[in-house]
Length: 204
Image (cartoon, rainbow, N blue to C red; front, side, top):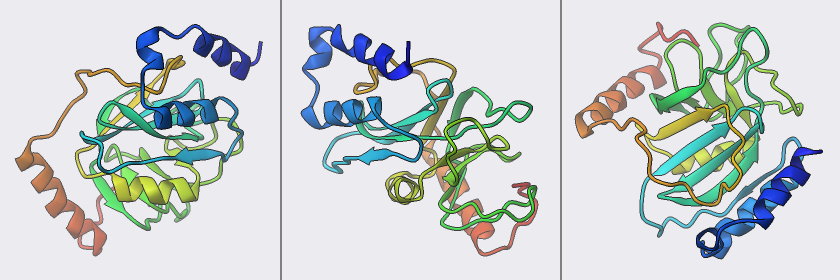
C-alpha cells in the first residue's frame, strides 16, 4: 500500500478534536498527502501565538513547520543517505546564514543554512531526488527554505524523528529543549562572528 493511501486512511478516521483544527492547517496537511519530491506548501500567519518549530520525519521524507501548535508549512525533504544518516533527536537552531558553503564537502553551496549541530548537520536548500541523499543535512526546496529562514529564530526547536506522523496538523506540547534568553544571546553573538568570517572552526 502506498504511503499516500496509508496516510489518507489514517486521516479518514481522525478524532473529532483533530477535525476542529483551523482550516488553513488542515489545508496544508491535505496538500502534504499528495506531495511529490520538491513540493511544498506554506501558510504562515504571524498573528498566531507561539514560536516557530520544525518536525522532520525521516521515513516520510517530509518536514512540518508549526507556529505554536498549528501547522503553517509542509515540505518534502532529503535527509542523510545510508552511512551518513541524519541523526534522530531534538535540536535547537545554532546558527543562521543566508548563504554558506560546506567546509567538508567540496565547498558545496548551502543556501539559507540553519545549523543544528557544530559537526555537520543543518537545514538548507538543496536537491530533492525523492529519497535520502545528503551527507547528513536536511535538504528542502529553495522557495520553502527562504520562507522558513525568515520565520525562524536562533534557539528554535527542530525535532528529527523516525516516525510516520499520522496527523501533522496539530503538534501537542512536548519536552523539546529550549534555550534560555542568555543562551540565545550568546548564539546571536557567535553567529555574527561566523557570518562575517571571523570564526573558521565550524566544520560544515
